[in-house]
Image (cartoon, rainbow, N blue to C red; front, side):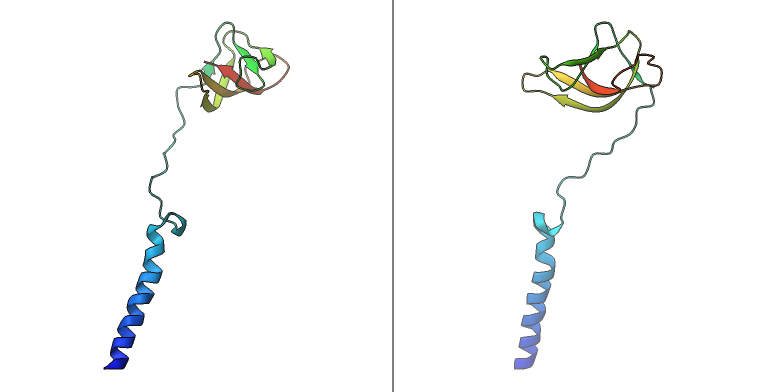
Length: 108
């Protein structure tokens, strides 16, 4: 009888030790599902008048170059600063004939 109680006790302890860490954040359980990102099939984003490619997402940041109206851009990421301004990290498309930087930040 003592051996049966001992086996049940150790089985319970082993089950708790193996299953409890799964519910903890360090145990691998992921509480939120990752966002599914799909590429937009609308085509490239086109620049408007007064569009300036900057080094970083700050109004006072040095400009890399000015973009002509209609220059195709591909959005790499989006960032919102503390004041509520939106910035896009973009890559200039093949249609841009200007010589210079191909990646930078554009204020939206």
